[in-house]
Image (cartoon, rainbow, N blue to C red):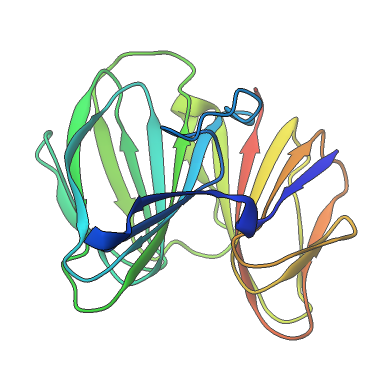
Length: 221
């Protein structure tokens, strides 16, 4: 089954007056929807847009695997475990909040920052926080988040190019840029598909141009 969620249907949040725009795919904060709490291990998929100088002051997380993909600009990260980094397009950032961690996320650059941040539920609570950045991850190289029983596949497709969606109990597809055809549906940038019991499914970039997708492969819901 494929459940397509359009970009325009996301819950809008953030603080536009402070240069922060957020688009939530799942129930989040004041946007409570008991029928849209999670899919597989995915608890949140937020599109964040930060103006130069804008950002999120230090705030806590716990029992959450947080994976971030920058589409444009540079994200500055600092956390209470002593990690500090600048994350750019093509980098995968993974913060395992475990028993608890605090962090700051800012756009310290001169250009707008756009990133997708995904929260996953861990298989077990607790533990020690950890942090990793993989710079310039190669296309089709899966990134494992074993604490959540999940694999992230980053796919960059040329015009007309196709890719298989993993045969898995749960797959979550988010289109970062471009357009793809998936199971008879056309998905544009910001659209997502929640796929249950995928088998032999393919995504195809349209002939009009390239596309970039984030695909989560998950064994448990």
